[in-house]
Length: 227
Image (cartoon, rainbow, N blue to C red; front, side, top):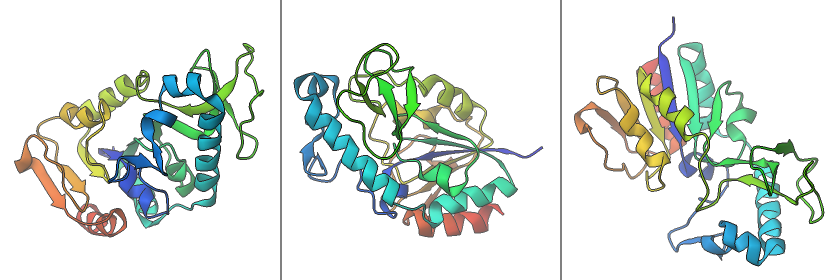
């Protein structure tokens, strides 16, 4: 049997495909305060603005292409039972060819019911229009977990981490919870590899192999170490 290799990815892996990180150094996302476009309160206050914002982000995602880091994780499937847990709302892992992907914060290429987040739908094209409704009759919105909303896949992700033989963190500063706490579920004896230009502080540092590089360069080095 192949060893179970669990990968947690963050914005850094998508940045090299041209997608801006969720929150830039100035605290903004594409020029917007995240609390104006990424909270239930923002949706209630100005749904047109929020809908337009995610329509534009979706257009950017669909125009982007997977990079060598995404493809490197696919390559690892030849040798390991690879499970990807991503904080990202793009679908670049799937388009690269990864088999097992969990989206902690939703995926922007789907819509969801305004009443029941469990009702999700594929989107025909890049746009959700105001007036597009779910089967319950409520407005459709982007299938994205906002600040203040539950993270429905976090328990599943925790269980996957608990059974990891090897754990890899790529392109995440571990600043957003509860995703940042997933590394603490990894068994203490399991080796951890962290790829990022700025390695975040973690527990059990002696177990960590630090690769202080971008996602694409770091995955090249990781493939040499693990294959």
